[in-house]
Image (cartoon, rainbow, N blue to C red; front, side, top):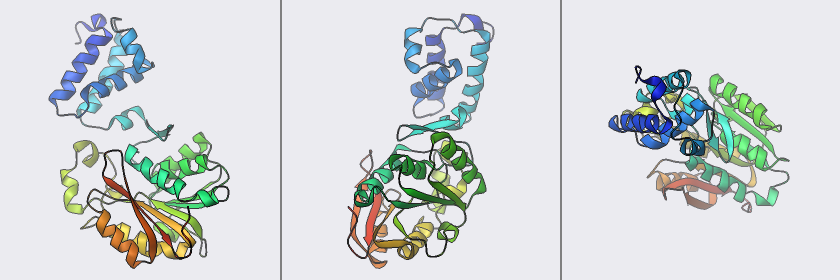
Length: 294
């Protein structure tokens, strides 16, 4: 590739990178190759097709080669690019936060649907906010809402703060602390949401290298059974919700029945399970006392 660098065309480079990624067991080799090359060239992906036979300059090829090296090591594409789209908005991400995933958009949808009755005055709390993708999306979708977001990681909050400023989430308060400990005493919310760590400690080793070796362990591991943080959220949410307020949490595959029992024991009613785009039971929600929000 180095000796003939100036004669490599876009279509040839994409094919080469995709074959290389495929041979290393990367799940979406062609897509990754196209996304990385488009970013290296500063062009939309569609332009790769239109300019398929255009030769790359040495500088363009060198920039793409560095991206390929990072992806070969299984670094997530989002970290290489520095951003990931969530709910139609570009969120900056790096190794301090989890990569936002389409599954988590289900959590946002549930929170918005179950708070329609208070849409103009919604008070929301996002626990384990990470990049801020959930909290910022709620703040942008409900511009008159008041949104709080907490995280134990100072680094994660720095990323969330940058995203909030860049994406115009003006009515968002970010606080560092362990779950509800970062919230002022007596504060009550219409909805509490969270995408907490829910992978069992013994299962982290079995995750894809992209996740296991790069994304923050603090945001992945949820104790021996994966439910340590979820239990604390469910048990503590009632003290921070208005009557009829809603708790909505993302859970791992197969955890929904157990978490539904936690909801019931903690006094939640009208408990619902929502499947994600892959038809996995992904989000549990319920109302605490009073009349459910809808």
